[in-house]
Length: 274
Image (cartoon, rainbow, N blue to C red):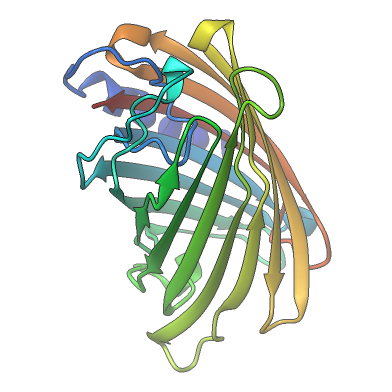
């Protein structure tokens, strides 16, 4: 991986957000950290994974768009932060432009489109103490090069349980589970069958101007009989709180024999409105 390529990707992400039009009104919680607070959410993300054993790196440029599909409001009382969680359905779509640089055993670089994914969540229950949201995610075999995707189309039933203020005022603990299995694609590529356990902790700081996320994840590959753990630490900050513009820095690392990378780093700019 050459540094200029990574800097160019970072510059592109910054330019993307500059041209996003201002929309919308201020809101009580516009950090985008609550997985069941369904708002309009646009994100431009650049991340880099250092592949294990000095095998190279992959840069992922991600465009993410989320939108609530229902306007039913829960009649909540108590903490104002959670008084607008009642939108019942939300759709999230993510597209990728990736650059893979392989150093071992030979040097090679390939760039192109990654696998598109889309997720639908249903807010089954919420109050000012806890909420639950099942959903379904789909991963599509859209990569422009075999090295940039799995070669498979997969489905993934998903479940989030979100607990508010259990780790202090303004905190969220949102464990999640996802089972991913392939339903089609290239017959010469390995099938996908994974369990993903997500332990998500977030603390809202400085009266909503900043946040801290600790996000351990365990991925069990049932096809390859391997597993690994990935942990990310995210520090976020509101750039323009009234307009829902924010950014974050997210370093992380992975452990385990099945890990695809050793270290990763991600930064993003977000625009969130109702």
